Amino acid sequence: MKVWRMVSIAEFIIYIVVSLFLFLRVNDGAGAANTLEVKMISFAVWTVFNFFIFFIQWVWYKRIHKNKRLK
Image (cartoon, rainbow, N blue to C red; front, side):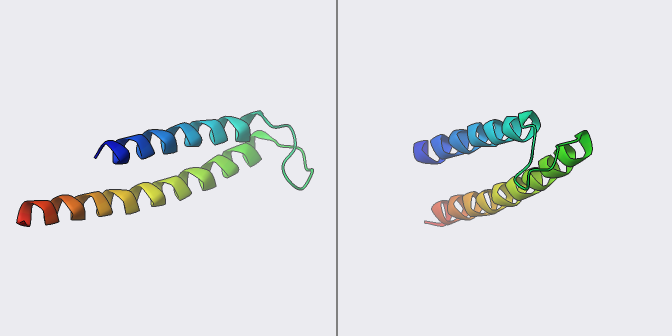
């Protein structure tokens, strides 16, 4: 489970770095100015994506632990 913990920490660090990037950039990928509304929408999409990844990991983690207890 050490690898699991390290991957989770790495994912959290990547989440923080990308979140900071989304808030600190002046223009988005299309060259449009980033207003607070656009930044919040970008952050919301990024957060929903990460919650989806977290949910998949959580289900997988529970399934692994359930299988370990059955053996």
